[in-house]
Image (tube, rainbow, N blue to C red):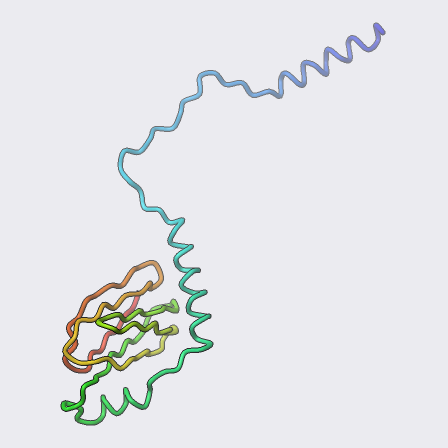
Length: 150
């Protein structure tokens, strides 16, 4: 029994020595100014990418109607086109909403998305583009083109 006592003392000293009790710890200074939260940005980008991948499977573009509007004189027509060119490094989903109108358009990197809308109405255009939110309200009277980049 006496032989175990010196060994247990060394073992006890090792255990207590490995404990890190620091009673004079300086706590970090709390920043009084808000900081940019990048945690939600990653979630927003991945959420937009998931929405893009889901929409691209079922989306039917209005290519013929948009080209007719852009190439022919369509001043007497009730509808006109909105065209969005995505020059960013991220896929996006553009939401167009207005009076009795709602449409989501998936626009890939380096691609052009478009839609036909009624003339002489206000439309809200919005979407996530990489780390930025795009949002604009526009009164559409004729064909409208937007180029977005990051």
